Image (cartoon, rainbow, N blue to C red; front, side):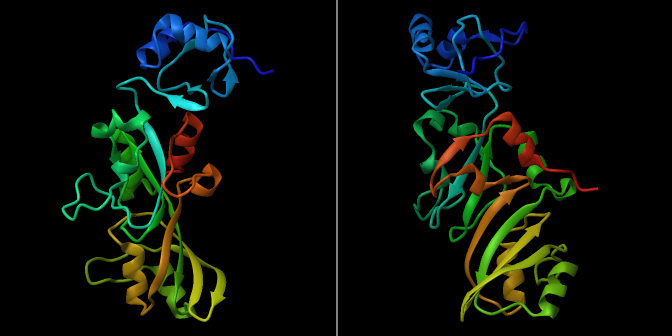
Length: 258
């Protein structure tokens, strides 16, 4: 049986029962009972010592496999956005938004959660929400070069000239698209040709605009990764949301653009 690491001496840390109490899980005495029953893990390790210390924002605490956060603590969420859900806080057409998908455990921080770039209603896949404005800026601003990877199906194959245009950057009506990485994945049928595109900027509907400029119609579009964080490795079903741990946030940021 794995045990949690020994208590840490840190001015910003809390005893495990104090942490659970401040997070609203239970009173401090009941929180101690929860620990004794083996329901609490710290960074994946079973907590058995009531003197165990937790550093908010650095350590991952779960109770019955549900991640626990302090109010006001930096929160980074990954969502596998389904089709038909809009990425906005308020929709004039009264469609369901990504905020409607937040589990109750995160709903109290919904007002402080913002998203790192939009996915249109028809696009599915990885969406990052956070209370950390600096992180969101790093993920969205082109100067940091955080890679966003998409898979798409189009109705006709991309020619060598099309691939060259994508890799060199296409001049669109609204803006000049930056060069992107592209490779063929598979051919699924007469009108289903699948490709992977990796962009280092995130302008509105950029993949769709580039394909339209090449005379291609997108059948479906999915964002599969941001930085080094892949939605498939997170094992999130469409519509599911969960908090990211420190290592996952580090992978999310990815390498900076030279």
